[in-house]
Amino acid sequence: MSRPGNGLEHAVHLGSLHLRGVVLASRHKDKNATADHVRRATALAAQIPTDILQHNLTFGPGNTALYELAAHVELDAPNKAAEVAGPLLKQPPAGLKPSRVGRLAIDTARARLATKDLVGAEDALKYAFRVAPQMAEIHPMAREVLRVLWTVHQRSRPDLLVMAKRAGLAN
Image 1 (cartoon, helix red, strand yellow):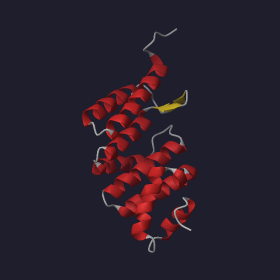
Image 2 (tube, one colour):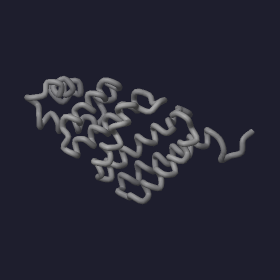
Image 3 (spheres, helix red, strand yellow):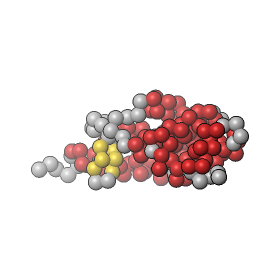
Image 4 (cartoon, rainbow, N blue to C red):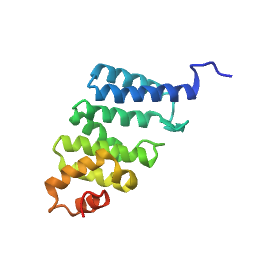
């Protein structure tokens, strides 16, 4: 029997708590606490070869990268978030379920929108609708990005109309 504090289960549970800390600290705009939680989660994720789902918690290197990306958006560093997002979207981390990859695409769309890359934001949103359509249709952050894009480009971008209809934002 392993001692408490050792092993995969410990890394998943403690790492998941640090990911929650990333969310809370970044939404509170606390850069130091966010960085500390990211550092600790990354160290724990390094013990796991690929993301795993255990006790309804997904944890590993990929999911940790997604949380770090989202933290950059929350901390008003969309350029850094967009930079981090590029390679992750091209090659999503192994072991991530479609819902997590969809969330990656939504956060990428948020970052690109904040950097005024409207085409990139639309492309990321399309990706979210492709990999996790049900989630993309109802997720508040996806809907907000879509609402902004729709307002700016509703007549010139037919793909936005399709997504807006699916999300219930247009008739």
